Image 1: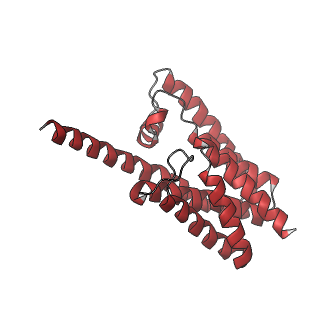
Image 2: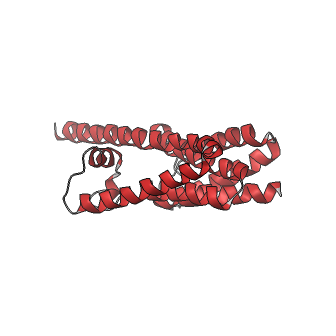
Length: 205
């Protein structure tokens, strides 16, 4: 009886973790629309992203101080990982900063490749890893073969659609997969678009 109760609790916790991951990565995947917005409304998009991250930081500070922010607090609670409980949830900040830095520092096409790598590659890696990851990769803080494979495939396809070069797409996808494997926690949101955007700009020079 006790084993059944424990098993039920673990199953419920896993279901909750997966639900949170799906919600969190759906936000991640939405970043794939940013390159289009940047191409049409560059200054406004950058301004809105900076404004959003600034407001988010204020709301998080207020939340940690015990003040409930309508809608924002619910979204944060729905997306927060267990490791983020009672802490400042840093993921959205690094996500937006990675996009903004990439968009400002790199040319339009390299920046788009970097942002797509973040949105599709990193987003699907975590989701697929949670849902189907069985084989874990040593020294990666729980990353899985399935998740890393999903990252490689997603970045390869998105990069191929932008650059129309199989050779470049393979190289960039491989590098994105290696970065995603690093146990960086939320800081992969910052490193992936900036590093992949920089690599792409170097390769296209």
